[in-house]
Amino acid sequence: MTTAAGTESGLGNLLAQGTVLAGRNLRHRATAEMAVMFVVFPLIFVFGFLLLFGRLFDARGLDYAQFLPPAIVAQWMFTVANTSGAASAADRACGMYRRCLVMPVNRGAIALGRVASEAVWAFVAAVVISATGHLAGFRFHGGIAATVGFVALAVAFALVLTAATTAVGLSSGDPAAVAALLNLPYLALIMLSTAFVPADAFPGWLEPVIRNSPVSVVIEALRSLASATPAWTEVRGALVWVAVLGVVFGAVAARALRRTR
Amino acid sequence: MSVVVEAALLAGRNTRRFLHSPQLLGDAVAFPLVLLLLMLVMFGEVVAGSTAEPYIARLAPGIVLFSVAYSCAGSAVAHHVDLRGGLQGRLRTMPISRVSPLLGRIGGDLVKFTLVTVVTVAVGHLLGFRFRQGPLAVLGFLLVALLFALIFLWAALLVGATVGSVESANTAITMPVTLLLLVSTCLVPLSAFPDWAQPVIRLNPLSGAHSALLGLSWGGPVLVPVLQTLGWAVAATVVAGPLALRRSLR
Image 1: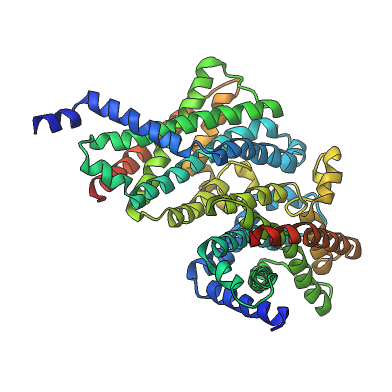
Image 2 (image 1 turned 135 degrees about the vertical axis):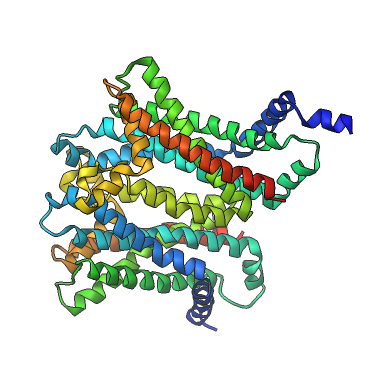
């Protein structure tokens, strides 16, 4: 019994096993398709939207090349979380999750492995989009600290979303259904935000909803961090949202991790 | 049996499978409607100033075309599953034409796209979309939408027979189609694009079909855009058709 406990409990085991599982999660998704995704996604959403709206918004006095990339970063964070939800469902469906449960593996390591691998994807995605944006004219004007804050906020946002999708994925256990189910809230949340269009371009009655959506708040904070004058009030609003949602979704995910067999 | 009868039988099978699946039905019909509403509130005010027609007159045909092209991902997936799941193997042991399974897939999906077009146009009507060119143009609208569908259906059959998994069949259609939507005249008029990009935007099959649908509903040139769509459909049939058939038989 002591040997089993010796391989399960403790911070050292948590970290070591979490690292092993994170590596497995990363390798699992490091496919040719993922590489294609990393090229195609920025191409479609940065250059596609810029072509589409660049001229219309320039006429309104909005520098769309500076406006757009933070939104595409946030959009990709949704994609990271949705893919992760489907992966959790697949883990349950193929028996990987159950196998971890019957082995002397630290329970927390399963969660940590997921968090760490998604943090890596989110970080890479934020860097790739920022670099693509740079080609289109996007710049970090706020200095190194603000730039680090930009990436950190993006990754934190992805992890909060991942907590929610992990709960959905583990409870369902059907990867295809989870992917389809998560697609609709993702589309609605990203489109009904200031991601592609500023709030004042929405119909008046909808504007308050758009402005106060957590997605808008996070995107505005990212924009602020990339601007010449990062505003603490905007960043604080985003941090509050990320913290609150982190606690709520974290609790839901922890419950799903405890209950799923 | 003749090829037509065989294809019709298989098209019937595919249509019934679709109609009996609430999830497939919901995806096909609900997706365009959600998109239509979201894009109307998102882009309506930004684009409205730069065009003569109200935004819904431009957006509704655009959403019809996008949903049709996007649903071809479902066709690619279904074809892939038929090939790998054994249906194709079973059909090949029967004395039927080798083309029939492909034609059956296309026929069944054209029925599905008719449904998508009718529902999207009906909801568009509630939001202010109108046919102003007479009853014959309404029929023309549907026929152009289906002709346009043919371009992506052949591509979908080729993708379904080529790729290794259901997921890649899906993304191999949805990703390029999303890009094509953004660089087309479905969401904003041609004049909103940078001058250097305009010739490319014009060539996009979505732009050609969109001009035709706009001409047949709100008003505008019809003949040239219809011919452009016809050209794309013929090209897709001639190029992707034989390739899709050969790969499906392997």
